[in-house]
Each structure stands twice: as structure tokens, then as C-alpha cells.
Amino acid sequence: MPVSNDDYAQYADLVKYVHGGDWHSTGSFLNQHPQAINEKISSYNWTALHMATRAGKVEIVGNLVELMSTQALAIQDSNGNTALHLAAVAGITKMSRYMVEKNEETRSLAIVNNKGYLPLTMACANGHRDATVYLSSKTPFELLSIQNPHGSLLLQCSISNKMPGKRFHTSSSYSHTRARLHSW
Image 1 (cartoon, helix red, strand yellow):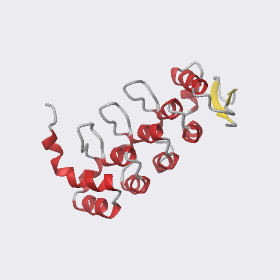
Image 2: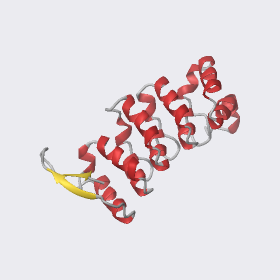
Image 3: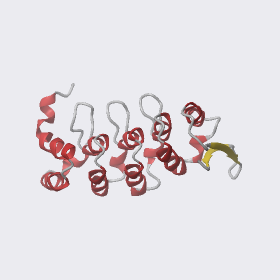
């Protein structure tokens, strides 16, 4: 059954607080409604973390990540994006760090959205050098192989965005060849 906008009315205040960058009110709302931290609160199937990330509210993102479970960081919106995908699109490395450092083994780095993009490839496709370098250092090697579609896409994005000083090299420290961004 499709969800109507009326189903999100109970979260209208939370949306207002997050968009306004008001952590005090956001935190108070979540103390009163703890289940709301993981709820999809918009027609895009965004959580409060998705909203704060999309709005560029770095402080709220950091505080929400502290409250959330590592599994909740993998929640996808209607386009298959996690909040980490949205942070990559925005190119705000600090938000990506909050999410990745919550659990370095979070599977969010390996989740592809509906268009087949990893957070890393989204950062690179949008020309965000610092976010791309950071996410490439955390994304599992096997996803970056030039034989893997993600590695090939990353190479294509980096070339098309003409990110200066970028070079790729292969590493044989594992049993297969891997592409890795180095010396940006």
C-alpha cells in the first residue's frame, strides 16, 4: 500500500528541527519518540539522517550517527541511497567520516543505489576530490578492481572530472589486481 503524506505528519516537527539545524529540539523530539531515529519520515523514504545530510547539517549528522545503530546507517531511500551516498554527493567529507567511523566495517561503503553507484563513485562523479580520496581509502579493495564495474566507473569518473594530480596504480598485495587512488 502506498504511503501518503498524512503518514509523515507525525514527523513534521522533526523535519522542521532537522532542516533548521536545531539539534536541541531534534534531540528532544528523539528523546520523546526514540523510534523516530530509524523511521522513514518523508515521501522520499528519508530518515532524519538522510534529511540532515541532504540539508548539509554537519552537527546534526554527527549527533544522529552517535544515536543510531550501525545497521541503521545502511537504510536506503526510494532511490537506493544511504545517507553516506548523500554525503558523497554533497562532498562533505566530515559527514562521511562520522558515518564510516561509526563502524569501519559498515556495509554502507559497499551498498549500491538504484543506478548502481557506490558512495565513492558518487563522490567522484560529482567532482568532490577530498570526499573521493577519503572514501577510496575506506572502500573495500575488491570493489575497486579495474575488472569490477565499480573500479572501472571510478576510473572513468576521475578521468572525466579531470581531478588534478590523480593517478592510479595496481597493487598485488592480495591475489588479484586492485585499483587504488593515490597521491591526489
